[in-house]
Image 1 (spheres, rainbow, N blue to C red):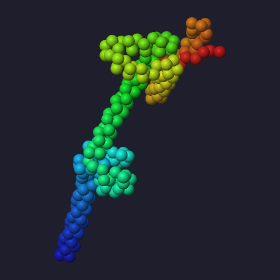
Image 2 (image 1 turned 45 degrees about the vertical axis):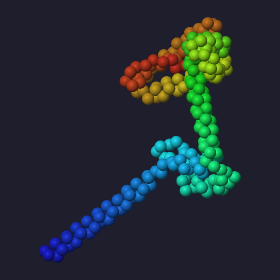
Image 3 (image 1 turned 60 degrees about the vertical axis):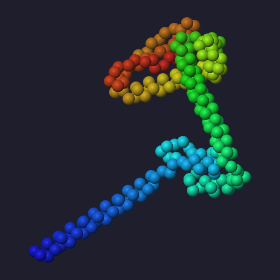
Image 4 (image 1 turned 120 degrees about the vertical axis):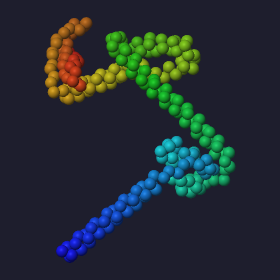
Amino acid sequence: MDKWLKKSVEADDDESSVNRNEEKTNQSKLSQSKRRKVLRKYDYEYLKMGFTWNGVEEDPRPRCIICYEQLANESMHRHLETKHSELKDKPLDFFERMLTKLKIGQSVMQHYTKVNEKSLYVSYLVSLRIAKTGEPHTIGETLVLPVIKDTVKVFFGDESEQEIESIPISTNTVTRRIDEMSQWVENQVIERIRGSLLFSLQLDESTDVQGLCQLRVFVRYIWNFVPHEDMLFCEPVS
């Protein structure tokens, strides 16, 4: 009996020892993880070596204002001496002027990027309107764009009118936008049909304004527990 108790105590000691070792290992890993997550904030003194920062609060890193290369903190001094040795003796004023030019350039780039994104969005909106009304695609640049420019000029001035010039709504562009949106809608309908447990097709033959026979196919399906009906395609009948 004593032998059994002794072995049991020894087993408990071994188990507790293993648990303590595992706990120490986990604590060590946790402390190492915490050390790895320590972030060194940007110091304005780095500008003396020609470095600003990337602007990311979660992971601030020095960025060279000459070549825009992003480096670790310990590589800044070596980078300036090896890559831009002719600038290593420049005063702080020089790098401050370079930083100002960089910020101005970034601001201008961000402005035009936002303008281009809005212009692209308006291009799709105008093309969608033209497609819905069935008007010729030439109406975009012959009527819609001039009307937008006149309206913006009256309400917001000449500078805003110049930004309207960047809206791409030429005849070819409108045609391409409509084709892209049509393809997107078709893909969406097909994906919905594939995800529906039940669907049905309806075929309809009709004649267009030019007297040509057209086959139109409609589809009914369930999407998000709601019945839907869409035109699947329309093709001329030969």
